[in-house]
Length: 413
View 1 (tube, rainbow, N blue to C red):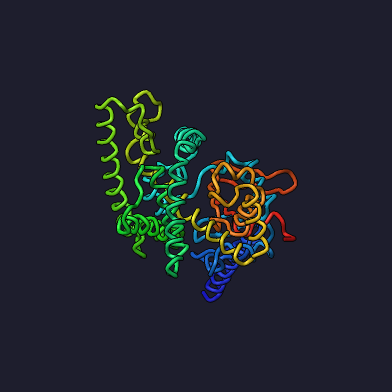
View 2: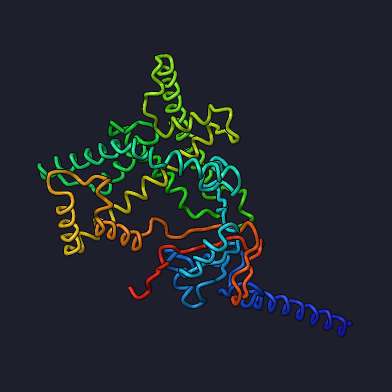
């Protein structure tokens, strides 16, 4: 009996040792997958990404190479940390990496993937992209709304000038957020925030959306927490989307009422159209192969607010900060503007083509301070890397993470 128990114990020890050894070897040298650090159960490599994820990924890439495998909780992920590798993924294998990973925030804020950013690759995504490029962001539409942008810029400069005359401090970041918010509001729905209360409401809403989207949510990474709202993120998302719904319903109803009055007066064709008018035209056009619902319009408009408000203001603020810290470069930019534009008027959008030094400043600002830290994509088909790398990414490893903020094409700079 003692001998039998000894054999059973030895069998279980051998079995457990084999399983542990297999897990270790699988983490170190998985066939067809890039290398990566050992992971913890449940957490994966989440503990290695604090405090700033893109900086932590950069440090890990120095040790494990430009192509590295990690686990974000229970989600397998491949990190691409070199320009050449990123080019191969985003250009050579673009069709395989067209989708973005779904999170609790993206599902609710995109109205179940009905916007451009999170819509799955297919006929609807192509339709919305074409809509953005040809109708909403086309040259003719942008030219028609140039006066809106000019007015908002002049308004901001006037506010800052008046405050400077009385020696009052100016919150540049706040003024830039107000500027970009008013520009987007005026272009999208011909409605600027006239009162401080109204402006504050819109800014607060967009700020909350950014904050909630950036929260680390256990439900997105730990599989057994998927249907739990342990941090209250889903509750906050439903609240902020409910307030956004109320705002958009009110604005859409105002637009429809105004459109009806213009139709009755017979001057509909002469009236200038904003982006929301264009979207409502498509919503009412029954001949289109893909119809736009009200929820889809809300999702598209929210895309424009989130993509154009905080990001644009942040880039401008960083550019101003860099110029203040580099007075020689600021003086060169000032001389170029004085030479090309003169001192009697403000810089117009048509002047930018003749201001190469100013363009270089903007590009360098975007290089030093990208508007996003990391970009994530989902593999919708297997990805076979070019010959010689011996790496294949199957559907079992769908996430591709690119730390844009550390992706320097000029390492010597």
